[in-house]
Image 1 (cartoon, helix red, strand yellow):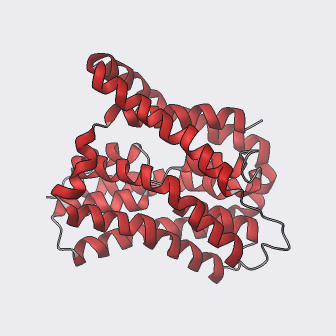
Image 2 (tube, rainbow, N blue to C red):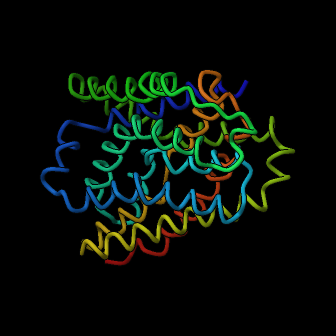
Image 3 (cartoon, rainbow, N blue to C red):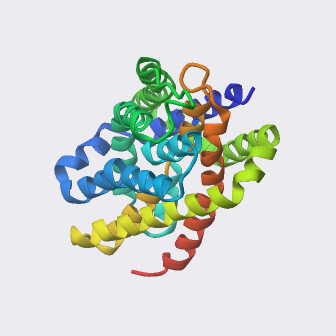
Length: 283
């Protein structure tokens, strides 16, 4: 069962994120509010709007519509910090945005997905129900708790935290690849049947999100490094968390809904790696 792989991987990724965080990372919103607010507006508001628009334009089925919106609801993953570093962006800003979005989205995901379940055409006929309470509990247990544990270990045993992070950071991507492979094996027919349409929609979601990051950073008159970071942070979401929510027996219990996130995890890395290669040597 895919969920038995998803849950440990998600908890491990969130624990690894916690190992990199410190309380000061959450304080940047007070010290440098402009870039932080611009990034959060992009992630919390702009992304879901793009997802809704794409779903309506392409007349997605309710299950895939919900899956695309779910991706847009999730926070940026810890990989975005690595991509920001490689792109010579503002790594401190990237870490702060990841930290803040990881906490805030624990509570905004139920709100946005609840609205989606009511507004998306055909959801009543397809019987898509959102148990909000269970979703909040799952987010707290699978996402917030591992982050807190990681932060506590970093605060009390910094050297041990560094050693653990060195190991986990190297296996994080292979674990995500493993998840994608297992999911593909179990759902290969559905993925292949919908790859063309979902591939286009997911690619547009990523590109428009990155474009939104560029537009927001220009409007806020941010520096070049801050601009690169917003483009990456808004364009790179936590696919593992999206898969966990979609396939969890406690929430949607729908592996079909997780298919957009599987395709997203592939396209996201291809597009963001290309972006990093293009901009890494620019000031």
